Amino acid sequence: MKSISIKTSIIVLVIMLFTACNIKIKPNVVHPDDYLSEKEHSKEIYKKNVSTMWINPFNFSHTDFGKLILVSIDNHPKIKTVELVVQNNDKGAFVVVYYHNGMVETYPNPNLSINRKYLKPNKDWKIMPERDFEFVLDNTSKGINFKLKVSIRENTKISISIKENSSQTKQYSFLAAIGADLSEVKRFPLIYLRKAGFVPVEKTKTSFKVNDIEMELTKVPIDVENQSCYKTVFSFSPQAFFWNEERDTILNLTTTYDKHNLQSTNLEYLPTLNNGHTEIKAIVYKTEKHNVKYTFSPVFPDINALKNGMDVKGKFTINVDEIEGVIGGSYKIEKNNDKIIIYIEPEKCWQPMPGKDWVSAYHYKAIINPISKEKYSIKSEWTIN
Image (cartoon, rainbow, N blue to C red; front, side, top):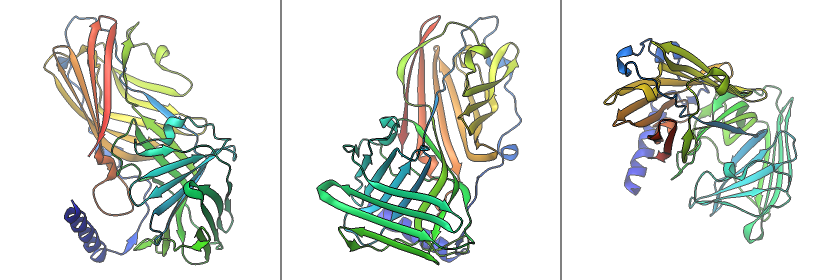
């Protein structure tokens, strides 16, 4: 395993040396018109003259990340990165400490109102007791102004100060590369960073102290948008969406597809009809100010009406607000003996460094079994490899 890691590092280094040594930040990765096909499902995939209950296999959620910053350091024997996430009310906040050995600790303050399940994406992550800490994270005309003072386990005191001083600061939109090193997840994380960027080295004052000992901030090995930058990422409008949380439950179906039963204040299904069968072209999940759109092509079929022995495949894209093609992927549906299996494979995304797209490590599988005409069980899981 160690030799594989070394070989991978060498490959990445060679790629950087023989390509333009500059990271260009991109808001998306695919163009939906090119990535998605225009094919339609044949009506022959469906049972004939059979009335079936309509099954909705999807679920969606989001949480309140108002702003965030991650700061990495080089020369501490245990601590690798420290992250601060602040809620929109500017009161609730939590600090995440990442260690070189893979351990992660989350420290919420007493004002945090986020559901704790979003603070523990992996079994190795520990949620520590609440504590007060001092923080400032402002977006000024000359760049970010960040301060943090927090005491963590073993009475370790962390003090960070970062202040940009440039009228030429630029901010971008891009997908956060998270979770690729996790061993388990309960839901697919789509953390899209708006008003975001890397902190430049030039004209920035920095201090990172652990127990009053000054640390060195990690630098990105190549330029980012033609600037030397620290490996410090910030966002003043992060969008935290989650798709298909794992379930092991009963689906009670009381009606055939009814648009009014599916729509809500934060969810909109865009259906099409195929010979009387309702298929889903797209789903829009909305928050107060933002939305994420999942588009399928061919459209997602009426899975309960499929004939036994069918194997249906397609692609999907995920848009965030007006930005199309943030993620591209594929889906597959198998039906045998009335058992339905759904596979979802995120495949493409933008990320700052070359290598395997981190989203492609995520694999979703849901098994849906009939219990009665109006009741079905669903068991779903995400795996990472």
